[in-house]
Amino acid sequence: MPIKIIEVGKRHCPAGVCDQCGERITDAEDGNVLWVMTGKPKSKLILNDELFLTHKKCNRVLEKRLSQGRETETHIQSKGLDVFIAELVQNLGVTLEGAKRTKHRMDLLGLIE
Ligand SMILES: [Zn+2]
Image (cartoon, rainbow, N blue to C red):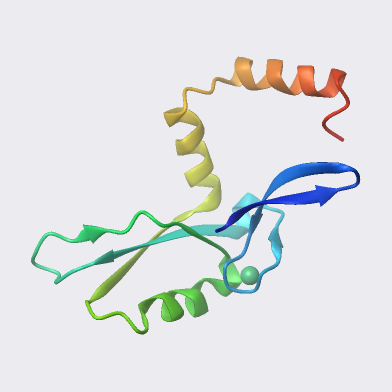
């Protein structure tokens, strides 16, 4: 589970954690999102919807680990974490103005440092 709740001071905050080294990812440009597809290359591949986060430096080791021990052929797919988040924000209908309003509300409540 790459997204976890962590304690920052007295608050609980969502954070991305590398599935390979277990360390927090603090820069989206330094992270990747991986997922696994299985099946033979010329047939329809099956999408496994589980996601994995990794630092870019940990990516190769995690890819190798995800490929091992599976009965079917695996195809590891990946995107930069920054790209993934931008696509997720768009797919959730979050607008820049909406995000600014939410941040402003949280600032007023003292929920963002
Ligand atoms: Zn890592």
